[in-house]
Image 1 (cartoon, rainbow, N blue to C red):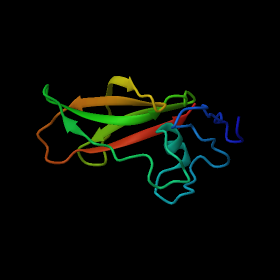
Image 2: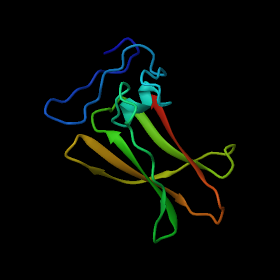
Image 3: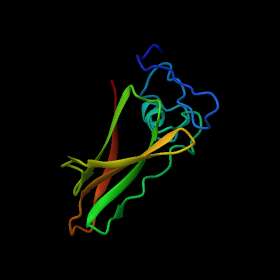
Image 4: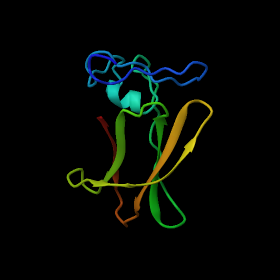
Amino acid sequence: QAEDGIRDHCVTGVQTCALPISGDPTADADGDGDSALLEYAMAGDDHNPNVPGMLHPRVSAEGTVLVDVPRNAVADDVELWVEASPDLVTWTRMSRRGLASGDDGQVRETWETPFTERITMFVRVVVRGL
């Protein structure tokens, strides 16, 4: 376990690996604006500014907004959820609709919220160490 209380994870033979967080989980070693904790939870690398990828919200046939979020399959010591807002002031936690596992060590979670006729909807990912 690292000094910050987040367990160190690495799975041999898997392309995506939970890199250990040593030091401040709010640090941003690669300068991409994503904290070490966020990159750990989303199967990223805090020394590579190209990971994790952008979120891609879409509207489903049922009329809900869906957001797919990559997850690190071995990062069971963090909680991650997605929130939506019409105005950047009021945030509502979206519902987790499902997940799919990939061969690369990632889990892709799908989150949803009812679609409103608003022109703009903001989405953010929240991560908390357990």
